[in-house]
Length: 111
Image (cartoon, rainbow, N blue to C red; front, side):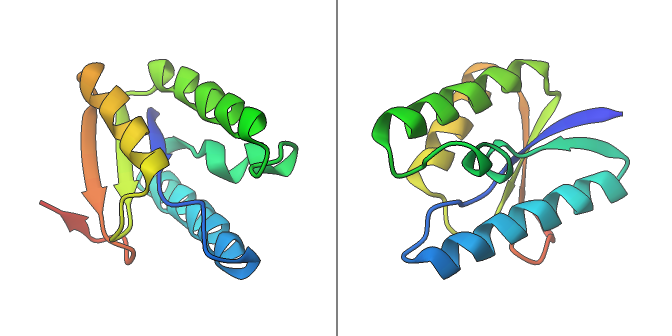
């Protein structure tokens, strides 16, 4: 299975929007799985045991997720807005010359 890094927004203006973004990340993982891929979305996992509001823990979570990028074949970017954290991930993927695919929130590929 092709391993794909799921890149989508996590932060939000309130707890409800963060919860919605986490649900979307899981939905995007399901979408990738249904396409025959093995998805990884660190922002759907790490906040379960790390405090995203703690600057050190957020930085550690970002770094830990980015370390997994070395094991991935592609990055799939979802959503209509690119957050600061997503920009960092995309920049690293570009430096790694990883294939990057973009999708809107409805999971339609943007070419």
